[in-house]
Image (cartoon, rainbow over all chains, first blue to last red; front, side, top):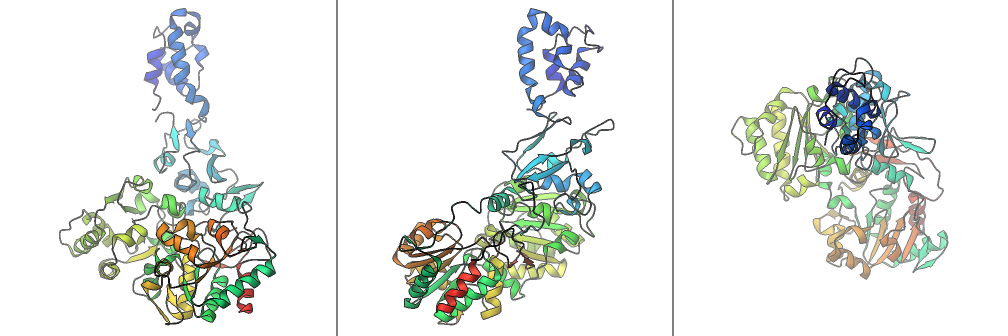
Amino acid sequence: MPLTPMEIYKLLPKTNCKKCGEQTCMSFAFKLLNREKKLEDCKPLFEEKKYEVQLKKLREILKPLEKATETGLIVKSELCNGCGNCIVACPVHVEKDPHGAGIGRGPRIRDPIYRIENGKLVIVNMHLCRRYGKNRILCVVCRENCPTDAISFLEG
Amino acid sequence: MICTGCSCLCEDIEIQDSKILNACEKGYKHISRFKESKAKNRVYGKEVDLDKAIESAVEILKSAKSPAIYGLDTTTVEAQRIAVKIAEKLNGYIDDNSSFCLGEFVEAILRKKIPSATLDEVRDYAYVLVYWGTNPYHSIPRHMSKFTYYPRGKKRNRGYDEDRFLVVIDVRRSETAKLAKKNAKFIKVEDDLELVDSFERALEGKAPKYDVAEIAREMKKADFNAIFGGLGLKYGLRGNYEKFFSFLNKANKFAPLYFIPAGFHSNMRGFNETLFEEVGEVNKFSFIEKRSDPNFSFPELLKNKKIDVALIVGTDPMSSLPFDVSEKLYEIKKVVLDPRETFTAKNAEVSISSAFSGIECGGEMVRSDGVRVKLEPIEKAEIDDVYILRRILEGL
């Protein structure tokens, strides 16, 4: 199940107390998902006892965030068979490595985003990904071309 | 190095800091486990040295009335050539897995009955790619990413979603079929012969039974299209290969359409080509009658009790063939050449330990599209299939 800001918002205090530094609880939920804020920044959630159940649930649904990389990518290596579709389809690989991954070979650049190591997909350098940094876009090419859904993103 | 895990023969495998890079899971397991459960030289269950094992093998083969050589799909072309010579010397049968795999298609390509191309040409020029009765995700994992759908080629450099049209034909929605999204089509087939008919009608502009009109339109747009046929296609045709071949030739009047068999052992095509060069047939050949016949395939020979000795190279028929066939193997004498301690090797009268082609010993193999590849082994074993087979030939 993809995690949405709305699901997080539903479990927050919804008082817009601004103690976290955000204007609304909804914007806090967004930043929580982007990992710009931490759950601990929401003070009422920890101070007031009536939010105890909500806090427990929040911690549970935010667990996948710990596993995901900075771009929200999760690789389930038990599902991967190393076909390499993601590596060859990746637009960044095609641009940076036109004579390696671009034409179907294993990546020839030093720090590719992905590489197949011992038959499984491994994330080598997340910083090259189009989903990373200031001008990021929500690229899902690798996920779309995985035959077994071994690649997923936090947003679904 | 070159991976010999399947017929793709990927040449970009690297080993860095004891990690195997770029190989798929299938290839990784093939390469990394070559030292596990090695076969031993055995004669009637007793461990012996190599010379004694070869001597006993020669004795058994000499005493044979009607011997057969079987397997050879995972060994090198050099070893296959010697094996053909042994079969000739023994006046026996020779066969490999292609008799129940894709041998008919390779034969048609070698006899130039149907047009075929190389996978490098497919990468550079192909537009419509049809996977018919095959699931490359399991059998040839890197086929799509390395040669066909995903890589950018000389004339097809805008990526898979614009410059390729993927068609997956299968009886169920396989992993590969899930990739058929935009600019692609999945056909759930019930009768392959009717589908061949539908393609013919669609290309002629008539109404087809299956929904293939769009595919025919796309094929006519391009100057290079390819069909990758697997075992699903072979058994779906129910023996009517000629109908499929005539469809391919007819289709070429409307749009260039090439056929490449997909998904088999690393050097199955190599065996077909080697035997074709030597005797003009691709498999199931008898040196007594000097012809090939469906009755001369290894499973048929066993069923009909036509052989008394089998020289089995690099395959495990006791595990892989159906029980009513493999149980007949107990009634004949077996000489097994295998690097791995297989079930057949354990039950063989003579078992000789060999080396893994491509990992421990070099040579030449033939990729599924007919391109010859020189292997780059990472270790150097002195005793390999070529050495053992040559000594058996000398002994005979």
